[in-house]
Amino acid sequence: MRVPFLDLKLQYHSIRDEIAEAVQRVLDSSQYILGPEVSAFEEAFAKAQGASHCIGTNNGTSALHLALWALGIKSGDEVILPVNTFIATAEAVLLCGATPIFVDHDAYYTLEPEDVERRITRRTRAIIAVHLYGQIAEMPEISSIARKHGLLLIEDAAQAHLASLNGKRAGAWGQATGFSFYPGKNLGAYGEAGAVLTEDAQLAEKMRRIRDHGSEQKYTHVIAGHNYRLEALQGAILSVKLKHLEAWTQMRRKHAAQYDKLLAGIPELSLPNVREGAGHVYHLYVIQANKRDELRTFLEEREISSGMHYPIPLHIQPCFKNLGYKEGAFPRAERAAKRILSLPMYPELTDKQIQFVAESIREFYAEKGGQS
Ligand SMILES: Cc1ncc(COP(=O)(O)O)c(C=O)c1O
Image (cartoon, rainbow, N blue to C red; front, side, top):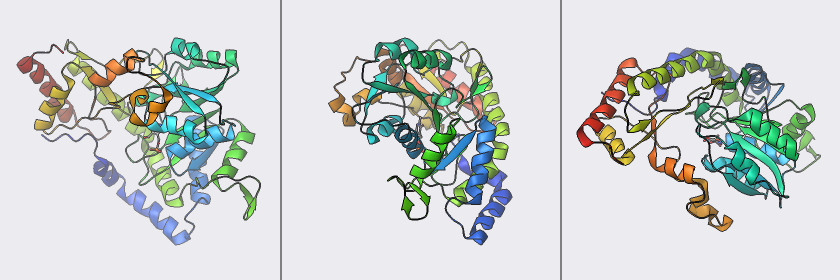
């Protein structure tokens, strides 16, 4: 049985007519950038997340950069972020001319609060909490650290659409929160797209300006900005998909519960930990496995695809050599990087496919033994 890691075609086919209508509407309007389709999506997404303002952008990396830029992060500043995130989180800091300061993760793959506090210096201006894999970081504690030290707090919710902690959704803690709508995300566009949420009306206005070349009126540029505008086609497509997001999220949770049940008791594995009070949205279902690489090959031979998010922590990425970190600096992230395995996860996955994945994993350890 073939089990792809992700199958975007299945989802597209389930909403094909709605998408065709939305796309046709944009083509007929001939307004292709920003405009009413983008504003309608921004309003609907802000509402779905319980936020006051949403600024659509051309991708999630721009969304984070836009937030940091508008908040005044600049050269000489230090910004704390987890070492186990996608590189975009750190790139957004570098694009402002600031220095990323890495922190190890906790048992939930999110910022370890004690390590955050340890790494604060005179130059620290902000903390970026990443809600990795679809689970909110320890935000009550991280917010209180940010407050205590007078730091800005930004959320990277690229993987956490509709995720919550104690009833509060992603975006409830930070001054600004970045989202990605990359096609494979829980809410994915049919191309590049992203957004920033904020509660601060002035900051929202500033971000709207920077996103569109710093202009208030066409050809009057109050500041020099950038082109981070969201396209109307993506706005219209995202509006259609947003209506299905709650149901798709429930399917992801159901699949995660099924994996939890079927993989329980295998001593060679660690299953995802879920924080108390968390509304995990399982962008990814990530296990840790002994003999991870062999297991991955074994699954591939059975046409089961898996992923690694992420195989190399940021501090040992070649591009960050100049930051001066050494191997061994982040023991938890380094150990996890060698053991993590993301199993197939998308709403349209079937119970039979999940059973096949779980049976194959059991078979692997029964055949090969599990000492790592
Ligand atoms: C945690 C995280 N931050 C930021 C991004 C950047 O988003 P995009 O690919 O839309 O630029 C991603 C997406 O891959 C991500 O997973």
